[in-house]
Length: 225
Image 1 (cartoon, rainbow, N blue to C red):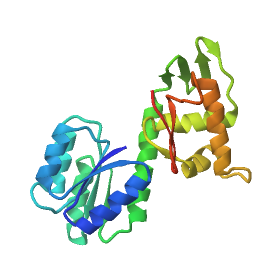
Image 2 (cartoon, helix red, strand yellow):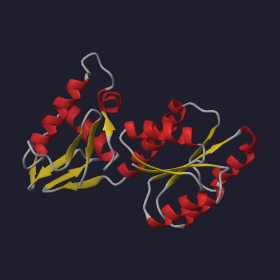
Image 3 (cartoon, helix red, strand yellow):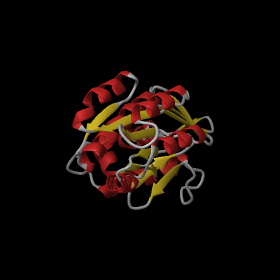
């Protein structure tokens, strides 16, 4: 996920930015609203996290600008107790959520994770996808490779579904354990790795050099078209 983080409190921005990067996201930090607006006009982002009060454009102006550009971007606003009414206004203008200062990095990371799940569910409405010469129907659970049916186990398909729901984004091993394997007694990080190997053997032209099911070393995996 491409994230633009706009906050003039450097210590908060750096700590939060590092946490989001550790979760596999690409994060760009800016410390004023004017620079943030310039970035929004020049580049596509999946998520804008913006403070309500900062130099230049404020968070509400950035929210309106982001939505006005027509991009499919989500917005989370950060606010102090004195600006809660403004944060509620942000929700009315299309923000996904707001977080009160002081907040923990874990709290905001949880909000981002919840947003990812919602966005993933929306993406999954597009039931069909193509990976090279492989066609996948997520709704019917049908996989064709060069027109021939490919048999996937239930667990392999659940891993594939989780990766497809967040196409292009890194999904951590922990998330795959929770969402695809349900933390059963047999669910381990190694089990996830084995399922990914099985998927690569069945879906990749050369599973030793995968082009679609990629490893984010030390974090997890991502699916790319």
